[in-house]
Length: 286
Ligand SMILES: [Fe+2]
Image (cartoon, rainbow, N blue to C red; front, side, top):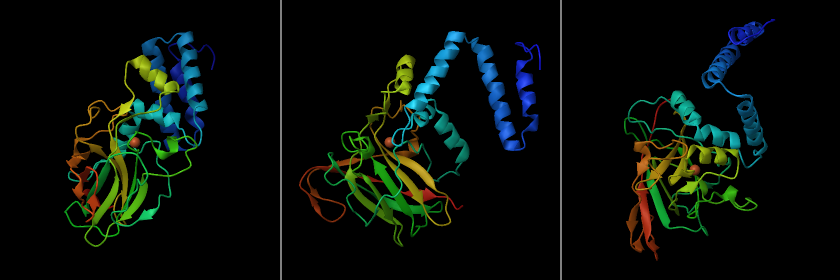
């Protein structure tokens, strides 16, 4: 290829894919090249802006380590994660909807019995979350596992704490024959996604806030059913309509009801006010 110019350059680069043996790789690269070139033509990107982009991506990579994933944050804040989620989890009506996994999931949470407290010694208002795991026809699913994680009452995940080695506010719960689950925790609170990196600077430049509405993360699995990675959002949260990562779905917003000190859903008593939330997960056959 000689005499590459504004008009013929895209075709010239696409032609270089002829030797690609994996058809899906070829399809993805060809689309990426076409859209990337179209973006540069549309914006008439300057050389300085091009370099700013290169430096931004470099800084994003440098911010990543075993506890921090700045590229996922970038994907989340640009709505890419939710778009991929939407395309890959087209569910029939009535099934529990999915949302972003987020960067704070840690494999290997402990198995816990019904009504175990996942947030002992953790700051926050006591909360009791319960419900059932059902199929889309409303029949209970026995042996379903809910892998749960969330922030403490100050808006921090365990892995964000200095050192980040002590695990809290995580647990796995398995349903019995009636499909029921119940757990004790603290009421989650809204929190800002990390803003000390390039993605934070990008949000600032866009005039956007970094907050996510309060939520409990859950991955629901059961043999013979599709896995669902989702959140339970707290009704009334001020960021429900402006989630920094576009993750809110109306069907996932749950009322966390306030109660004075007294009897709790696990059959004991709380000496302090607490709240309760109920949510039924509905899974689709795989
Ligand atoms: Fe989260």
